[in-house]
Length: 147
Image 1 (tube, rainbow, N blue to C red):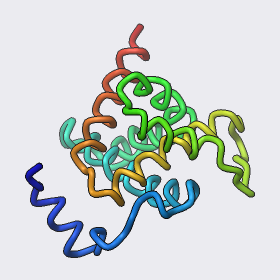
Image 2 (tube, one colour; image 1 turned 90 degrees about the vertical axis):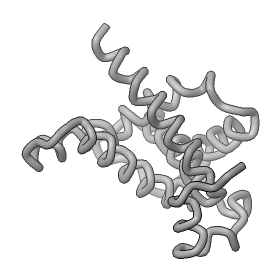
Image 3 (cartoon, one colour; image 1 turned 60 degrees about the vertical axis):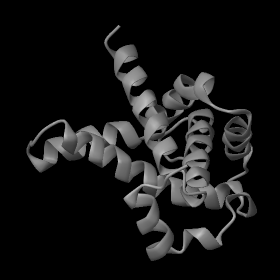
């Protein structure tokens, strides 16, 4: 598979080629996946067109909250490989010390599963796959919201 410029940049700049994604705990994967997911969501929001920053922030915030991530978890399940599904479930089942202040524990765990999958793919250098899954999830999310 040919690497994209972004994948080359990640390998050289961040040193990702020296890491094995499966050597990290599910919560460590979720930690990095949270940041990667937010970056993709912010890019998605800004690509929808120029808008006041507070409106872009609100749109992004709606998509990065645990309830939206949990919904996307279910919306992309059918598109995952067996290996990706295993990572998703490992993240979902990871026992975190913290619990959400204003959220549902089940939603929080599913959101953690999604973040772990994204973190896994990121460390593994599968940036195009992350984009594909997030695009699919957001498309299905918006379709389900308009029904």
